[in-house]
Each structure stands twice: as C-alpha cells, then as structure tokens.
Amino acid sequence: MFSPKLACCNLIADIPRLKTFALEHGFGGIDWSFTPENLPQTPAEESALFRSIEGLAPLEVRYHCAFHKTDLGDVDEERAKNAMILFQHLSRIVSKMNGHFLTLHIGLGRNTTHHLSWDRTIRRLTKLVQIASAMNVKICLENLGWGWTSRPDLYEKLIRKSGAWGTLDIGHAQVSPSIKSQIFEIEDFVSPHPERFLNAHVYHKETSQGHLPPSRTDDLEGRLALLSRLQLCTWWVLELHEEAALLRTLKFVRQFLRRHAQGEGPAAAR
Image 1 (spheres, rainbow, N blue to C red):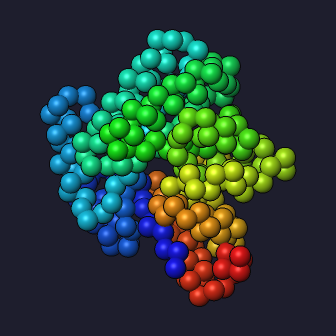
Image 2 (tube, helix red, strand yellow; image 1 turned 180 degrees about the vertical axis):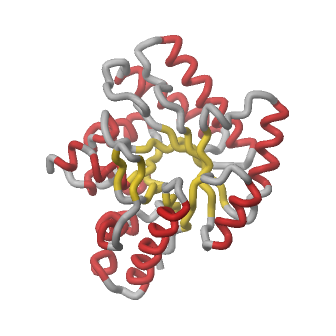
C-alpha cells in the first residue's frame, strides 16, 4: 500500500518546539530550508546546526535551498562560480549530517531568464550532481511557477541531461503558464521519467500572497493521485509556513490517503 511520509517545513525557529509540533500532529519528517539567514558561516555554527538536526530525531530530515537569484547558469561567470561554491558547500553540510537529499531551483527569485545561460546551467548542474553523488547526496531539481522549469518539456531536458532527480511542486505546477494555457498537463512534468521523482511539495497554489492551502480535498485530489503513482516519491512536504494553513492542508491530505487506501476515488481506480 502506498504510504508517503508527510513532512512539514522548518516553520518554527525554536527547534524543540518544532519537533514537538511535528510529532503532535503526526508528521514523519522535517524539510529543512537553508536560507541566507540560517546558513552556517563558521565551524561553530555548523556544529550548532548539527546538534539541532540531531535533536529532531526520530523525525527524518531532508534539505531544500531557498536562495534567490543564485544560479549555476548565471551569465555572469563570477556569480555562477559563487553559486557552484555555495551548492557544493551545502552538499557537504548535508552529507556531514547524514542527509541524502538536497532540493534546489533554477531561476528562483527572478522574473526573466535573460540572465541565465542554458548551456552553463546544464554543464554546472551536471557537475554538481556528480560531486554531490560522490558524497551520497541526491540533487533534486524543483519545478517553479515560471521560467524553464515551469515548462514540462524544458524541465524534462534539465533532469535528463544533468542526471538530477526531481522534486515536484504541485502548487507551482498549478500556476505554470504552460499548464494554464493547456499546452501541457501537469502529468507531463513527470511522465518522461516517473522514476526520477523523490519528493513532492504539497499545497494548492502559489500566488503573490505566497503558498495557499486547499479549501477542500477536491482541490488536491487529481494531483495527489498523480503523486501516488510515482513509486519513489514517498516524501510529501506540506509546504505551508503558517500553522493554521498547514493543519488544514494536512487534514485534506489525510482524507485523500484514507480514501486511496480504501480503494476509493480516481487514484485507486488507476
């Protein structure tokens, strides 16, 4: 029976309270987002982070990069080089903490791809995937709501040519211009390589207000049914950063999973 591990973000800064919150609500993991604000800068800060992550046990922890305008394929060589240094550094940190998954983006925080090089992106992402793999860390590429990774045809090429794994963000997919225009369907993000997806970000959709929760189970059902058919995608992050919205989403996701387990609904019928 398909049974994904449900995770929440590190939405609470106090680590003991984050752990208590996650366990009280039945989450199985924490998706830890690195940001410029919480990135350890010194060995002492790294050690403090390691202790914090250890303190989250028995919860599983996976990792996510949230660095705006930090791209391996920046047309500016110095900026691209610094991005590579940063992502290699994060891969080493994740490896030291016995983590195995690191999700990153292409074009996060940008509203144009004019400052990105396709060839450099492929070349540097391939190299990063190889370097991280040697440390037993899988680099997972997340689809965004705009840009190259919002287009299933280009997203597929980025994963295939670089050897990266996939993190499917169903809220980003919902608002992709390629999906809204019906040029592609959401299934097209995963259909070329369903075996490459290891993680999912679950919420209704992203707007200028941020990530919005569903209003009912039906808002998510078709997309959750798609995720449930991805055999290796067993890590579902409910990517809401406000507790009430997170718990509302958790309720609907659990309703879907109960129906799926009982053989009800479109997911079970396929």
